[in-house]
Length: 224
Ligand code: SAH
Image 1: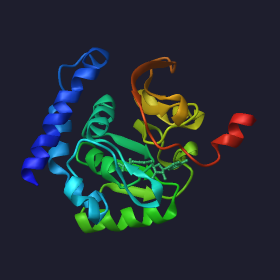
Image 2: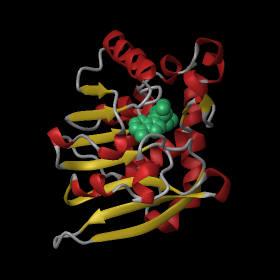
Image 3: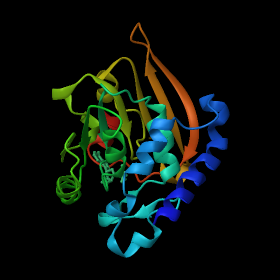
Image 4: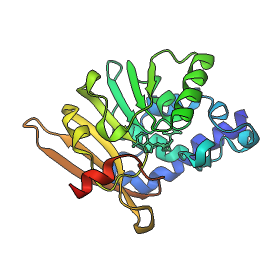
């Protein structure tokens, strides 16, 4: 396992070449890499896939969902610039892996999963593994989690057809929202949005990606 994990970290550093120019950074943040080293990814994949837990690729989990590729987890985490006092919102808990990585880097993580079964499973997983600073609930993440807003950063790990306006409203000034946007068949772009001092949103295109789609009520809102 140890060797496999070292290879995963090496693969992430190697893949970073694709985002060197867009991030302006030679390598991912050392704290982000330390979190990837610390969190046992094998605890977040189905038991029959444990042997593949440290391969640098997405893997299937329950309910037809996926645990994201480690490089993408590293990239999205790095783009959020997590600070120890931050409160972060995640949409799309899935296996809980991304939330676990964030929990090593910030004060508190709120994570929303629309599939109640997955949310229940992850709550038990976090209890078993001792992740005490993550709160999970089952609801439609399109609406965010207004009770704890505004956030120091928001990360969406399912592809949305557009950036949900409620999430922008729940961002602090100078905070970032990292989100894949686009239809699966048409290709998706990982976007990084930042709320500037005057509350305006500045958007940057980071990388072409492939995420499972955001489900829930957003379709209705597109038609409104
Ligand atoms: N971050 C996860 C990967 C998530 S896969 C990990 O680290 O493992 C995307 C997840 O988003 C799926 O579990 C899916 O059920 C969930 N999802 C899809 N639409 C959603 C919505 N509207 N609100 C909340 N979660 C949603």
